[in-house]
Image (cartoon, rainbow, N blue to C red; front, top):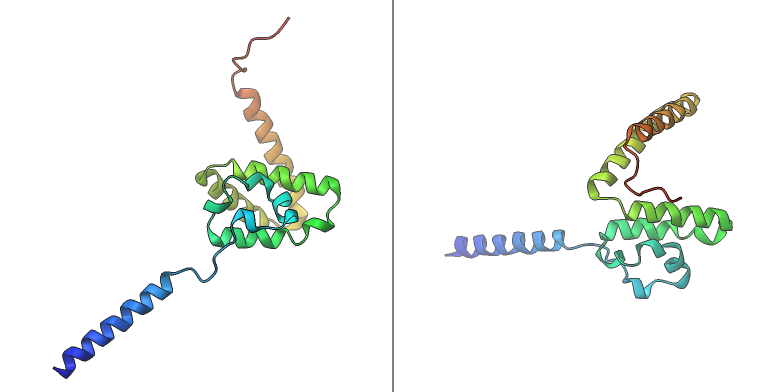
Length: 138
């Protein structure tokens, strides 16, 4: 009888431990609770903020600490890039992360050459795509 109670107690302890381990350690703030500066910096993500994973919210909030010290041009570029990122599909984001990690492994002295090669490849692809279906105006 005592061993049965011990088994039940152990099972209960394991169940509770698993439940606590699966609960998030950090719960991100809602969009409405962000400061005005954070909302300005993260404005491209306003519609999806409350659905973002907590870890992503945490990382994005960390980037907003530098935001007030950026020039107007840097702020515009930050929000522009964030807007482009917010429109990517999960698969496109994954591919972008993989490209970033691969590029970060390229030695600094070769990065400019790699950038030029990528730019040329993108231009080549753009030229191969069919012209837009929008008719030309006279």
